[in-house]
Length: 344
Image (cartoon, rainbow, N blue to C red):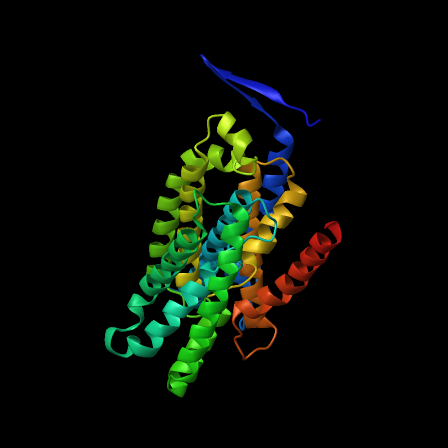
């Protein structure tokens, strides 16, 4: 049994176990080192003195490289990865299934279909500024349809997952049709976006995504205790006073918006929402805020390192981070499937 201590402040008291938070500190340190490495490495690697000089003299050449070119890209990768990981953790809590994620529930496919449709039919007239709005609208539309189709005197995790898989297939077909019928120039840009990339990130995009993530985090904090009870059987949770259907709907909505926001700015990076929460459960088995923060930090680290590999391994090519995320996530997903199949 993990060690625990009692914290008391006046009438308020809470039992606190420090061991999961040691793991959190370790993962946060790994995330920080990954971010620092991503800022220093690239087509023009910087030595530690040059890296420090960039912050002392922001208008110098190292300052331009670090603060204007790499920092927005690294921070956008961090925010996208963290948001996708939190979304996946919430979906896995609500669906009671380690295979649940924004990808398997159709959220990623819905956002992709809407974004590709925008790039093909509206971007020429309206510009690319509306792309995040289109992606978020697609994610919300799909999860709404999935929830409506799964509703029969309430919903169950199994029905939601099955409907999500069906909607993901339908949205995938729509995306393929739009790509085939679009001009070649549009198709190429849409393919890069579908792979998942933070190429060309700027401070405006970082500020907007950070604002969205902060607002969603404030909404999530009071819902966290409900997320911890979500894996319980419906009858048991109802007996404990949890309004199961309302809680499931709220958590599903927050998870979908988080995934939609991340996909809107970072593209359809598959498997982040699946891999990061699962590894977090291995590192921090006790469900709680520590597990959620671990998952978020792992997702951020995964996307930052994937982007770093994409822009350093094949110089002068700059490959989308989604390629490396998928290369890591696909064998992980297959391993999970095999484990679940053997347990049946």
